Length: 541
Image (cartoon, rainbow, N blue to C red):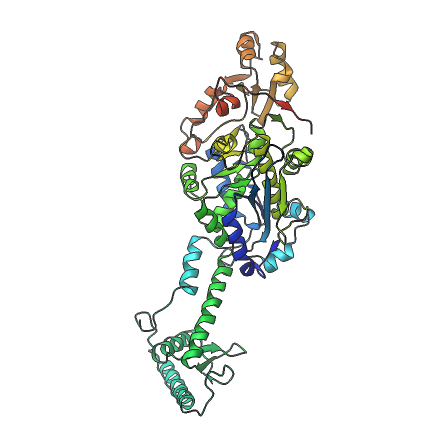
């Protein structure tokens, strides 16, 4: 279901109710840009997680949100011996447009990508739901939700200019004549069309009139005239006044919710501590916190501490698909490909997903709502592939994959847990760093010395950083230890063990380059311990 400014307040109660019942929430964002135009700050394969975070803070602060997709999954029945578990999914595609206060910067490449995939920019600009951060919430609360004491004159305007005083006294005299006429049955009590109209005045004087009427005439209200150019005073009886105040209270609450927009939902997610699930979702987390909560911290450790208190259970379906816990080799983990592998290709073994009536999403990748729905379906099936119950406290996927994110174009996975190091290597076995090679070298020529040293090609992978440096991953540590002394490299090449490269990289750096866990360890060691082995099922896509 698409959510816009027209139906947000109406649908908000249902969204919050479904959120309260959900077992997990899948989410996805579409943004106006995701890349740093400054090439010196572009992503590099050797970026450590803290360094990548600092680069992305600039991007998430510069660009903005177009859509937030959220799909709330509720477990309908437990897994039995004869069937997979069943979920009901309520999915919303929320167009978001800032409620003033900040300019919108758009990346031409990002906008072109979204345009070719059918993004409705007219709905985004014309009907996007507002959003505010915590400071915006404070201002909105004071404006719409706080009740001002009319008897507190400490902040009231005091007129000093003769013309202002004369204007007020003249209009106040006429106002009192109207009030007296109504009280003496010479006027229409409570008639919203036949009140007393003040002479036109500026906002300064209008505020003064509001203050004085509230202070002196509690049964008189002020409203704008139909043309919006003047103020009108209407005298109400007690019953009319109660009804009027209740109507205004509801209007103010709805206006507050409308202006708060998606922050109303985000606060509920934070308060509930419900698990949230994304796909390659590091960018999404940064954007949603930057624009709907507060500015991002200037170091990775502070950001991780913030996440631990606000969103303590985050899962990344791309990380789960690549870390090895599924026991499958999946060649392409793009969202649509992973959906095919984990959902479509499983046929009758797949987890059953029923979409809530009225909350369905049509198949349209790169619409945030549909992408969120697919992400949730993938996560439910990843748990099922691991033969685990989402409600179990012994769920190995939930405990071992929580707060670990896939990092694009990187050697590393990221760890959001503030009690742990920043991340760990993606690659098994041994990694060496090569530099000072000729620019005409390619992957095959780089691997030549390793292959001539009797290391098989299938055990090798070249990971290019730039024209001046690269990594070679040797998946067989035993083979490397046996063959490394017999390998002959060109004299000009500089070859270093990964540990030495990392130590040199960290020297003199800030805490964004904090040490990583698992150097020299395999992914299987990280998840299952050194002694436990697991089988691997080869899957063709």
